[in-house]
Structure formats: structure tokens, C-alpha cells
Length: 190
Image (cartoon, rainbow, N blue to C red; front, side, top):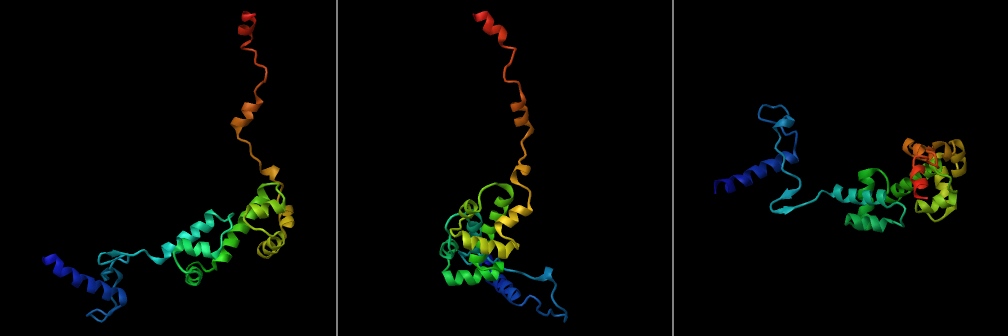
């Protein structure tokens, strides 16, 4: 019973400290950080809340993982559990870029990687990263990287120069094809 009476007082103190963290102490100097009592942000009574940033991270993770699919702001907002307008404002505030801009940036970064490491055509790469218009892709790519996709590829060595074959594969293909150590068993059988 005594614990039940003490809990509301501790909660009130914690909420007061959270509202004014540099509240003057009785000695006339600011209260130190270690003196603050902070209530847990995820619980209030018996109801548990999830911080809004967690919802935004779900949408960001969705954009990172499924950038090649036809995702839109509505899909990302649904993943975050927020309305489209509120989600766009909150996402921009949290990450410094609009949801559409973030998704486009992920797609263009992946396209740049594919241009450096593969010999696929620009149109194939455009479709592989989830974009549909090669013209829009080229314009956006040039705006971000300062060169067209073909110019960007020309500045980097061909993908075949990057092809590193593991030594175990080289040894396996370097073995002689006609082995002689089993010839004795084939001559004995005939």
C-alpha cells in the first residue's frame, strides 16, 4: 500500500523535471544532469507507447529494403501507420529529406553501383532499381552525380576489371581434366 502512495509523487517529480530540465535548485545554480529524474518515455500508467521515430524508421527500412518495387509515399506512410501528409512532414523533420526524395536517392545510389560493377545497359539498370522512365532516370542521375549514366560508367573501369574470382574456384578449374590415378581400375575391369 505504501508503494502505491509513493508512485504518483515520484511520477509528478519526474514529469516536472522533464518539463524544465535546468530548473533552479535551492542553491541558486542550475540542476546537474545527474540530479534529474526522468520518467520513461514509453510508458504512462498501464498504456505503452512507441516513439514516433520508430514508425518513421519502419518506413525508412521499407524504402531501403524494397527500393526496386513500385513504392510510393502512400506505401511508406502505411508502413509508418500515419496519414500521408503527417508522414511527409514528420519524415522530412526527422531525416532532412522528403520520403520521395529519400527513395529516389536510394534508387540512384544503387544504379550508380550497378553501373560501376555490371555491364548491363542503362535501360536494364533503370528498370532494376525500380524506375520506369529512362529519360527521367538520366535527368535525375545527371543532377545527382554530375554526369549522365553512360558518362559515369566511362569514368569508371569496366566491370570485368572488378571481377574477382576466388582462389578455390581458380584451383578447381585449374585441375587437369583427364586424371590418371583411376586408369588402373578401368584397365582391370576390361
